[in-house]
View 1 (spheres, rainbow, N blue to C red):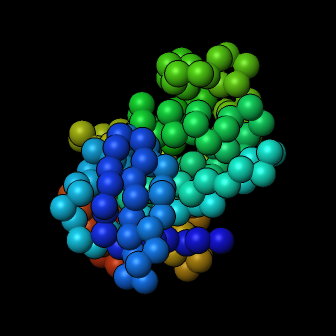
View 2 (tube, rainbow, N blue to C red; view 1 turned 45 degrees about the horizontal axis):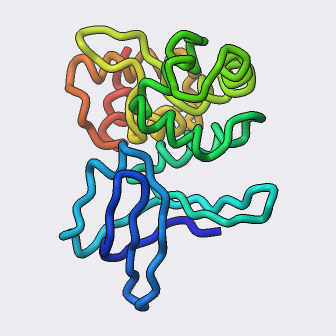
Length: 200
C-alpha cells in the first residue's frame, strides 16, 4: 500500500520513529535497530521503505527500513506461520540482513535459534519455507578474500539482469564473485554487469 515515506524525523526511539511529510502529515513507523541506529532527529529528509501490516484483530501498523533488502526480508519473514512482525523486527535487530539471508539460505538453525522468541520448531519452519526463496532472490557467494557471504542489492540486481541476458545462474554468480574479488565490493549495478559479462 505504501512503498516508501520521505520526510523529516521529528521523533526517534530504538523501536519507532515519527516522520513528518511535506504535506504536514506525520506517520509513526516501527523500525528495527538496524535502521534506528543509522537515523538522527536532525535529518531534514529521510526515505524509509515501508510495509503496511494488518494483524488478525484488524490492528494496522507501518514498518520502515532504510534498504529495500531489509524490507523484503521482513515481508518474507512475516509470511511464515508463527513469525509475527515483532519477531521479524527481532531478526533485523539481532543480525544484519546479510547474516539473516546467509543463515536461512544455508539452513543454519543454530543462528536462527539465537534470535529472541525463536525456538527449534519455528527455526525449522523458517528454513523450510524461505530457504529456496532466499537462494533464488539473494546472491549467496562462497566467502573468499574477506568477502561477505551475501552481497547488497546492487549485486542481486546484477545477478537478475545477467540471468535475463541468458547467463546461467551458476555462471553469473561465479563471474560476479570474480569481479568483486578483483575490483572491490562497492561497484554499481551497471559496473558489475559490464565486468561480469567480460569475465571468462
